[in-house]
Length: 327
Image 1 (cartoon, one colour):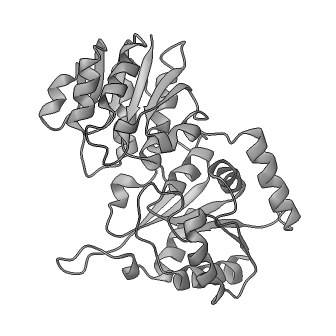
Image 2 (cartoon, rainbow, N blue to C red):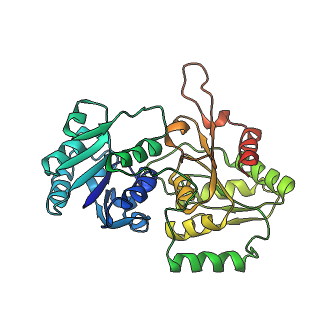
């Protein structure tokens, strides 16, 4: 049975589908084909159970009709048996239908759901990754979300991460290691960020109360936030923002005990490599967008009246409480 998982959105959504991909791999002797946005393709190749990866521009956030013909062609030529669709887009669902995949599985919702041969009710207020994981049951798998790693960084990335940490005096198991992503952290689109000052005070509290070593991670856009943090940092902190690619960053996070970040892909990277996380959510819904599992805590900002919730309504003590409950 040849299965394709089709994920629209970005890197976060592709990683949220990681437990589903691993679960589906248990139902077939063939590796699962993964169709995802181009920005997630390299990482998707390393997900447990994933075989061929099909980068599709039509699956990226805001793609509209661009690239739908190419997606149709890529699906059609592979002679697939089952398509598991992790997308609310009517255009994407219609493209899968037009590609004549015999069995099409997805969540109920919208008129386009009639294009599925099998579907399950999905609650928009519940965790998206868990909703998708339930699709496994339609193919006879009882896979459940857990703490198992679904992504193993490659040997080169792992070696590079180990050398970086050792050269900076970080040894395996020597003390609590907390990674903090103070900015955009490889997000496909701009995300709301907590203030660098609060991240710095959090790092100071972790160092003084738990003797924690703190490592800053993120892409080149996060250098400014990391520099701003240094103004208030009282403890020694390793800063890798803008210095590492995503694979090596994942390997560093895999060596850490915990990751703290806003609604960014690195939360899902942490889940995929088996590291606990505390996610900060303001205008977005942490209950839906955070990694699934009790080892992943959500700190959700409370709205002020009719205005959308802001991360600035989250206090350092709120995050520290979430961290201490996760340790």
